[in-house]
Length: 257
Image 1 (spheres, one colour):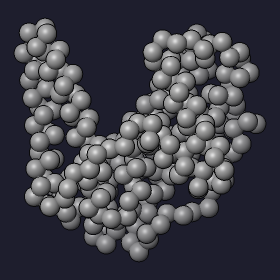
Image 2 (image 1 turned 30 degrees about the vertical axis):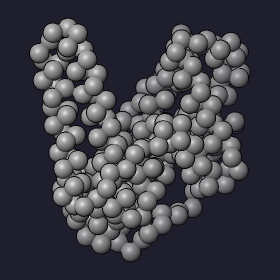
Image 3 (image 1 turned 90 degrees about the vertical axis):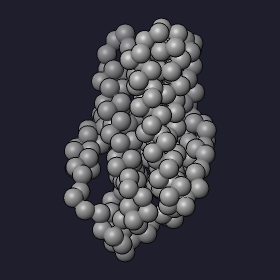
Image 4 (image 1 turned 180 degrees about the vertical axis):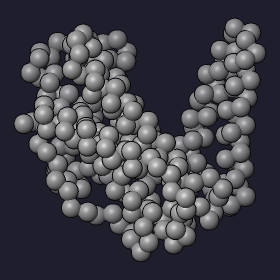
């Protein structure tokens, strides 16, 4: 599993540079065009998804070498969040039209605020805890501000794809970039299915046996690293001037060893 963990380490090294906020977005860059439309920055929303994805990748990688977490498959539950955050970032970056990119970024944040508000509203009403209700109100206020910002800019809101569609999209993007001929999409879907079943208390992963469980782990970590690499490269292109398509040469280690 050395090659896969080398890739994981490389993602951590990249993240330190990527997460450093630039003082200025070039006006003729893709992210700069977005910033001319609204007060929030799509670049910051993409970086937030990246940051959350990297943090959960680190947790999953650490857990994958520790018993009993690895035997129970708990590392794949942590990796599920990394997969989804990466998939959302890639979805935002997959449009080269400023209005669409802004709408997708806004949709991602608004959905997060909406779910948080609903959860805390229900919990606050059930427990009669005013503190929870206040936080729920703040979530709703944040969502409403973004919605109003879209209205002022004349940008129509969009609906996010389902989580399964996002995972499919990530797999397809990785396959296209690395020439995997469907393998990465399948790896992403296996991770998605395994982490879903583990989240629901199913135990089939623990019955795979050591060798097969290690193979699933390797390929799951690898496809998330590949997705994060694409987010990083697309984001670099989004900051550059005169570049529309982030198509750089890359070589991905074989996770099967």
